[in-house]
Amino acid sequence: MAGKNTTAARKSHRGLNRCEDNMTIEYLKRGKSDAERGEDDAKTRAVVEATLKDIDARGDAAVRDLSEKFDSYSPPSFKLSQSEIDALMARVSPRDMEDLKYAQENVRRFAQAQRDSMTDIEIEMQPGVILGHKNIPVQSVGCYVPGASSRWWQARICLSRPPVSRACRASSPAPPFKGEPNPAVIAAMHLGGAHEIYVMGGIQAVGAMAIGTETIDPVHLLVGPGNAFVAEAKRQLFGRVGIDLFAGPTETMVIADETVDAELCATDLLGQAEHGYNSPCVLLTTSRKLAEETMQEVDRILKILPTAETARTSWEDYGEVIVCDTYDEMLQVADDIASEHVQVMTDRDDWFLDNMTCYGALFLGPRTNVANGDKVIGTNHTLPTKKAGRYTGGLWVGKYLKTHSYQKITTDAAAAEMGAYGSRLCMLEGFVGHAEQCNVRVRRYGGINVPYGEGAPAREAAE
Image 1: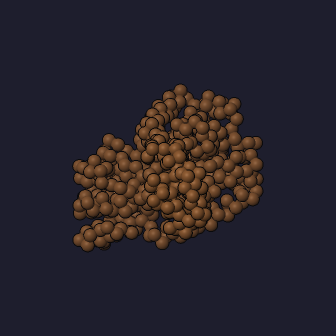
Image 2 (image 1 turned 90 degrees about the vertical axis):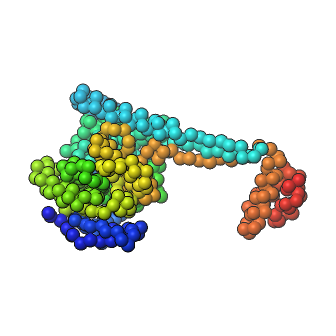
Image 3 (image 1 turned 45 degrees about the vertical axis):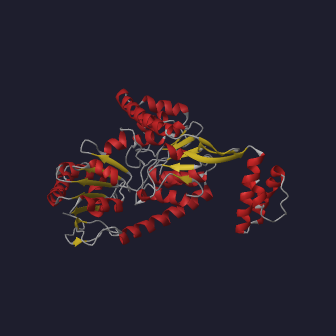
């Protein structure tokens, strides 16, 4: 087996801090170390920083230079006109268009159900004091999807879902495929509700959407997955614009026991390893026999897989095979790794659903698989990577909405009572200016003469 293998028993995984002393976790295969991955990240950061500065300084000229360099694509305008969109969609076969619409409808229905679960609220806390919140659409979104070496049409369907928020303007850049716009990708973007479609990719697309150029308006929010350079660009642009999450290279984990076989496990691992050269893929199991057979099966499939060049590199550099004694141990290791995609195939799949807390998305049972989640089933597949599943879920309808609170006092009595409490608490903290905001209401609406710069008297406030 190629790669960095070890059979040394260890008591904890990289960063794991919840394992008991008697836990035995055996690594039959390990990937790159944290230090090696850190070196790769540092190189990426430097490239992205220089590129974004160039886009900020030169605008469209920088974007065009980058597009010519990386995509061999330099059209009169990167933004597609409606006639160009129509012409590209006309090239999509009826069968492909039907498949696109089927997947689109699944995504739309699930997104609408999610949106329906999010309601505005208003509550009268006490007589005359009303609090509430409203869910307001983000006004402009840049929906980015990778595509330098593939078509990724489904991602356009999943991303173009500020659907549910119709006030949102969705601009979607799509990298050219083999030097030209891909008809199926453009069709998916158009069906998904993109208002503007640009043919560009990489750092230049993310940078142009966030920074703005002479011909591209900046957006308020960036969403979508990408390679390491795109993910780093989003990280550096955060603050200038909002982002959905840090969606880096695809990650997959298979949690399995003896109820499934090596072919299923190996196929599910390599199905995601083919995404890129740095896509972590981890097998976590209680069966050493299954672990060893899966490693052999990976070797067999890599000899016949058309995308083996990419998948093999990911497997050798980032693949891991971990054998645990118990399901509880597997749960702890899985939560620590916090993988983007977690395929669970055990005799207790729902137990993992009930108990796992850190992941991107779960795929439960052997009938389910990550590819269905990526392409057609209806859930969004822009998911947290690099342990971000510890503090966030994936992209969903809620990311396109902002929840804003509001307050309203409707009676003089409530204004005086709330103001008196606020006045005294402000003075307790030493904020006289704050206290006077309260005091002026106590004077006007409560008829109480509060000396300037003092807290409202408690006795009079209660009357």
